Image 1 (cartoon, rainbow, N blue to C red):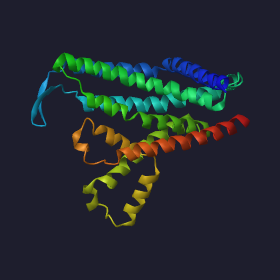
Image 2: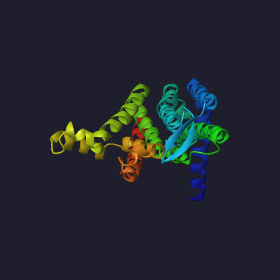
Image 3: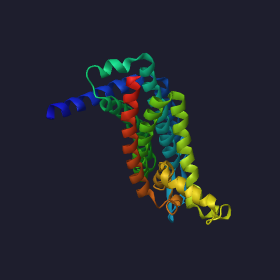
Image 4: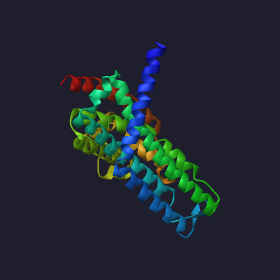
Length: 275
């Protein structure tokens, strides 16, 4: 049993390492780092401004923690969708995945290795950007925005689900559909959140109407990307703190979705192999 478990873990890390090296050959990774570096340099050279926060004067730059949070989130979504679909689709087109599975490697070990490789890239990218921003903040104001790190960390579960979904869509359909469907799902769940949470929308949609009921059903069933996004954003933007109060439910629901998707991944990948 220990030998089998050791083989599985070794296979996962080996494939993850290969995935990272393959991903680093993609231009998108260097484009992400280049653009992020540009904004961080802008942040360093921007003049400090004084703002009021909780009755206290705080010095910050025009590119604040909310903007950095958006950068980290957008790039993480891009890596989750584009890199995952591209790497898996390339191996399907070149049939190189059959060589890896013949070693032998379990199907789930192969998929888990791909998943882990992309996830590590997301964590490294976020860590580099946040570390650079924290160093700049210390040099400029002598403080670190801890809420920004908490916000970025609370999105990791969502990225795990997104990578898993992209793997599934790529296997079932193709890389283009995987990217479009994943982005559409994130956008749709984010939009659906507003009628559920925002009281301002009660004037537009009657709370007792069938439209409201349909939106609520969609909300509770679909992956909670939107709630997770807004809940994590509340760590750096206090204006969101009173809105998305079901953040913890969102994380639990996303965890369940990850389990369901991986069950589907196993059977869909097995079917593709037989074809």
